[in-house]
Every structure is written in structure tokens, then in C-alpha cells.
Length: 321
Ligand code: XMP
Image (cartoon, rainbow, N blue to C red; front, side, top):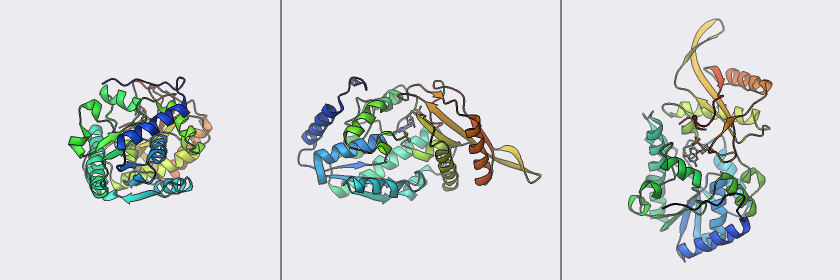
């Protein structure tokens, strides 16, 4: 089934919101639905659309998978409480980290996150709540890249011939599937979300597991979480589509206090892009890179190398995993 794209220029956000609210009401009827909010612009827009359509008949969860950034669960639940939406934070850290243990292959890591999310955690929530529908913020770029076999976006099923009803026992509603990121931002603004949300930098579904090359262990995730916090603080004023820190698997020779230190490598990526389909590295000022690097090597134990990616997408992709 081909999906008809609505470009950001063709989009009438108010009309889109009205149509999608009506469509959700139609599909769910007087039943129950659930959704997972990660705090990104896609899942935030879906949460607001769903609450407009269903009110309390939509139950919204923040799944704490142990892969999120520093303080993210509390911050997001707090922000939505201010918007009048109750978000239940569910601690599923052990389940995700157990599922990721021992896995190094990128696609297998994505699959482990997907299965744990949809089958185990959501499967259980759906059974317990009696909901028949899962609302989620899949966008057209997720579908394109998955179907093209570039990168399995963890939220794409139907286009891969997977029937969620059969595989997981519930139906999935995807109100944003005709849009790309720039269109979703306009819809999110029309839904009354604050600028910190509608202009928020994207963050991948597999979260920090996509920022670790090789096994995503508790320790390696903690390290990349710390570097991510430093990177987001130092690049916070930069006008870029997305920036990130990545922990490499290979070690390199470094030195500390006159001793050899066979240490860790961090790669920084910062992208200029409109819709994530293509991207070029941002020409960051040298002083910004220098300060970032010196903070990382002095604050994060074991890191002896910081590199900046200068290749474009394609052939790169934005995330490394
Ligand atoms: P790539 O790495 O494919 O990323 O060039 C393009 C954009 O998509 C984000 N990304 C994801 N988003 N689920 C998502 O919702 C995913 O599995 C996923 N993988 C990548 C990435 O951060 C970038 O903005």
C-alpha cells in the first residue's frame, strides 16, 4: 500500500488536526487506546491528538527503557502534566537491558528493542488495560528507510508485511504517517505544544542504544549518557537539525600522566538537514569543537579520543546504528 505524502508546504495544520481527531474517534469508537510518549515531537503530537479525540480513554505511558537521556522520564511527565495530560512512567529498564545483553549487530539491537517494546512491555500493558489500539507517531521517513532496507526503524510493521494484530494482539493507529518531520513540527505547534517540543531535536526510538557501537551494556550506556549531556549543553546554541555523541567499540592508544592509556573513542556528529532524508555536517566553529572535546576528555573517565564526522548522508546515516 502506498502512502500519500502531505508535504509541509501543502499542509494545513488546523485542518489536519481536525481530520485526524475525527479519524481516531471513528476507529476507536467507545473503546480504549494506549500510547507511548518518548517526549519527541512525533510521539508528543500523537499524544495531544489522541487526548483531543479520546480524553481519558487514551492512557499514555512513558516507558523507561534504561536507554533515555539524563532525567528524561521526570522532565517529560512534568511537562505533560502542565498540559493537563497524565503520563504514567513505567520502569522497564531491566527488561530492555536484558534483551540487549550480548548483542552487537546493529539490526539485531534494533530488533531487540522493537520486540521488547511491542511484544513484551506493550503486549502486557494492552492485556492489562483492555485496550485494542496503540496510537503511535510513525512518519513517512521511517517507512521509506525501512522499506528501502537502509535501517529498520523500530516502529514500522505493516509495510514490512507484519500484521500487528497477529504479532502482538492489537491494532496500530498512525495519524502522522503521511508527514515528514517538518510537517509534524507544524502540527505539534497547532496542537498547542510549547516550542521546546515542536522544535525539539529528533532522538531515535532505540535511543542511546543507537549511540553505542557494539554491546549496549549498562556501563557503556551510562558513559554515552554522560557524554550526551555534555554535548547537548555545549551545542545547545547551535542551529542544527540534530547533534549527538557516539561511543565507539574500538579502543585507541592514548596517554595520561605519562602512562599509556588504551582508551575509548567518542565521535561527535552534528547535522544540517530539512527532513532527515539527506544531511550535511554542520560547519561548527573550531572553538566550539575544542571546548566540547576538552570537556569530554577531562570529565568522562577513559575517553582519550574525540572525532567529528565530516561525511554527508548519504552515504552516512545520521545515527551510527
Ligand atoms: P538515520 O540514522 O536513518 O536517521 O539517518 C534519520 C532520522 O531518524 C532518526 N531515527 C529514528 N527515529 N526510530 C525513530 O523514531 C528509529 O528507530 C530511528 N532511527 C533513526 C534519527 O535520529 C534521524 O533524525
